Length: 263
Image (cartoon, rainbow, N blue to C red; front, side):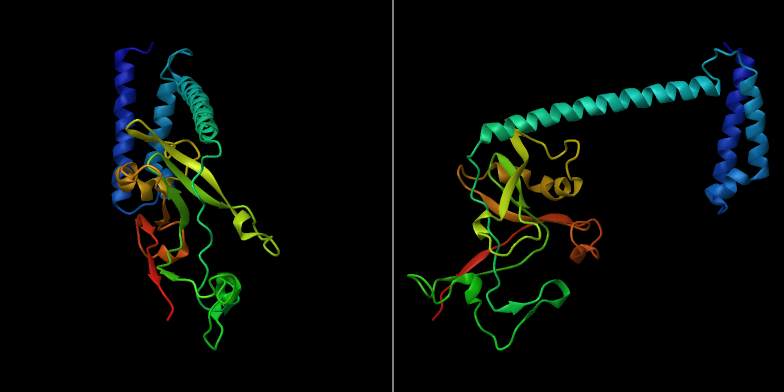
């Protein structure tokens, strides 16, 4: 082990280097410029010589430091992997416990009026007329059903009960022609309530944007009546391009339904 005088020199020189780097940064130097600064290089070289004078097994040598650092990283990675596997087992157990007792999946909300195109080419085609193809106007036993006009938010479509939070998944992808719309979506469990605590939203691999959006509302979700499911969009600065202009925006939006009867 190095004597106290030698270690005092090491500590003092290391402190000088840190102070010099802070001063250079305050003067406007970049990290690359600081690392190339001659005064910094000279002091780092002097520090290296002091370290090389230490005994081969001294824990203050660079070799020992980097070896410890590597071992700590490997141990942390092993623990992270073990935690992730344990979380996956818990999530799987919750999915199996739910079985087929999933809430009704929200289907796609269709446009009220006839439209063509998609994405940048989307537009309502004149003259204005009802979207009979998707909404069923003029067909069946009730050719003029009530119309529900909703406020549209684009985010991550989700739904929740008082005990579970789900994300709606599109199982069709780009293959949409000739398929039953009832088979388009599925639900993926994201979180469940264990006694008084929600679990899953902060698991390894979970979407931190969804966690940010839902966190302020978890108590309200927990207070939902049994058997009730709420449908909503998780909206976030980084979820949809529409919100890029809203820094640190994270919230949920429930699409309200207002019945409007045709006259």
